[in-house]
Image (cartoon, rainbow, N blue to C red; front, side, top):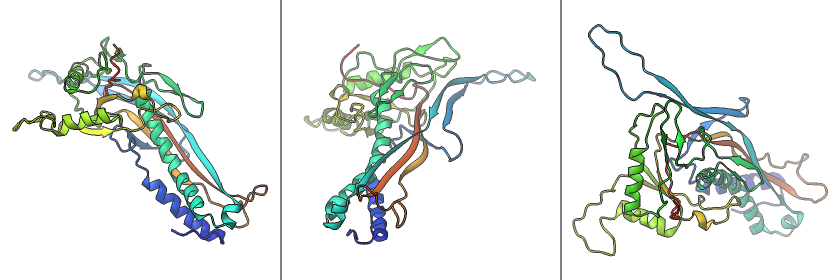
Length: 336
């Protein structure tokens, strides 16, 4: 679209359209992955939220003739408090850009601005998985982020605890193998043997997602396991794929990144299973990504010392992970 840079009102209208088009083009993979549950945080309702689990026992009890029914035990699970924070970025459209007809550069600046907030939300969500073996990390702004869950452990650990039982469980696969048929079966076995409610009773939980990074070998292995009837390099007519329709593949391109968002080869082989129904990874959305009120005639239209027209993007949210039983990890680096 052509930008009118002679009239500020016309320029603002077109810039807003460009910003929204760019925002809509961003693939927010983590936010739409099924790994995240989104909850609204309305205006004027405070800057914190407590997220918790409440569970009853798994089975009913016998009731004899005319006997009073027993009450189900109810157990408060772990809780985790989230705190809102805001993100922002500004750009200036200079006098020189406007007066010299630098349309392409102006369009690039406005379009890039529209992508920044959605990208940051996706990065922060992905880092809950990428830094999930630690209880904290320092983000790209130098802020320490608490990634522990309700039991004070890292999201991925070998000794998670329960509130109503002395039983412990693990959700990190022993020896951390790379994704393969045998490794996937070992992961499924770990899920079967480590799926508990807060009373230490075995739960049945559907794990419907196989997630990977965007490492080509890992994601292609996942595709082969889920979609091929046999190894594509072999001829095995009539072979049935036992994993067909078992999992939905979710590729998470920002998991294998550093705190700055740069590629991190140490995380390239991360993969795991997850239950979208039982996920306790929450995105509390308080302020959707939006363009800050753009400049207008007679107000903040032009910065006095630079002659810039200033535009900004803003968003506000919280990210909280409460428990670990719904997701698993193998780091793929063969560590014990």
